Length: 213
Image (cartoon, rainbow, N blue to C red; front, side, top):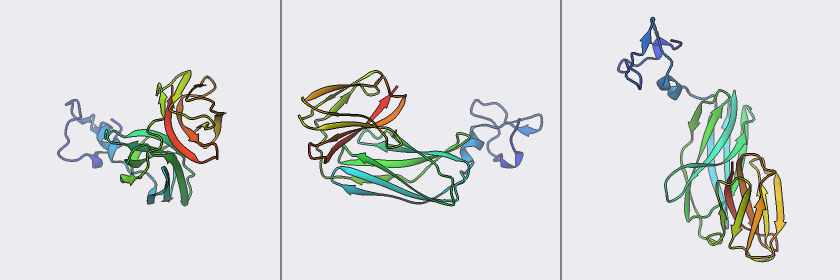
C-alpha cells in the first residue's frame, strides 16, 4: 500500500496474482509500477566498430543521475541475451563508454542495460554486428561457468592467454607451450571475465566471455 493511485491504469484492477490492487485506499506497489519508471539517463548513441574479429562497442549518454552501472549483453544464433560485461556509471551530464570483445560468431546482437542504484533497469536498442572471420572457432574454454579451474583447448605454442576483468585489469597471463592448458581461478572473485588469446607477435586472436562462480 505504498503506491500512487494516479499511476494506476483503469484496466489494471488486479495484480499478477489476481489480488485487488488497492488496499486501505492506496494502490499496492507492484511490478507494473516498477516496470514503467524511467531511468535518469539519455542514451544518445550506441554503435560498434570492427577490427578483424574484435568489436569495439561505444555509447554516449547525457543527464546521468543515480545510475549504478551498465551491463553489456549479447545474443548469438541461439537468441538468448546473456551478460558479458559491466561498466560503472560516471553519473555526469555527458559521458562516453566503451567495451571491447572478440566475436566468435558471424553475427551477434548486442544491447545495454542501464541499472540504477536502486536496482531498476532499462534496455537500449539492439545492435546487430557481423564479422567475416572466425579464428576462434577451434578455441574452446570449459567448464563455463567455472569455479576453480578453467581448461582451454585449440591453442598453439607461443600464444598468450590473458584473463581480463570487467574493469580491463589483467589478472592472469601466461604463454602457451601446448595445444591445451588449464588456468587456476582460485584468486578470481565471482563475476564476468574475458579470456584473451593473442599470437606470438601480440595480435589478438580471440576473446571468450568467461563466468566465474
